[in-house]
Image (tube, rainbow, N blue to C red):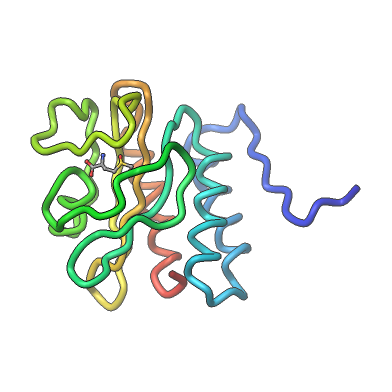
Length: 163
Ligand code: SME
């Protein structure tokens, strides 16, 4: 049977090519859909499929000056995070990607799932201001590198007017 969306990644692809496919799949899924929740939900599902060794993947949105939980895959998480607090709040307040090899060494890290060891948080901009962050957690130490940051950054860019 034909499935509607079949974006299964090839496990042998180099990381950069894997992210290129992830961004392509996301672009195709969000192209004709203006609803931000639908788009964040589908992009979260794609990240979960394309990015190995995660225990949490999803979005926090900036609403009235704080971060509010958005679509995600993983264990139930902190619902509201103050700007500047934890890894997500730091990424949102500074508008800068946070690549954290060991979350226990990050001052103020907010532990939502005790399995998390490393984390990557990438801001999503709209009209020059942060409107959301993409948060990825891994149960492995130092799971994320500059290639992951660049790949998720490319994903964040195509979401700019879509969430
Ligand atoms: N660890 C994050 C909180 C969000 S959860 O990981 C889903 C932080 O320190 O901001």
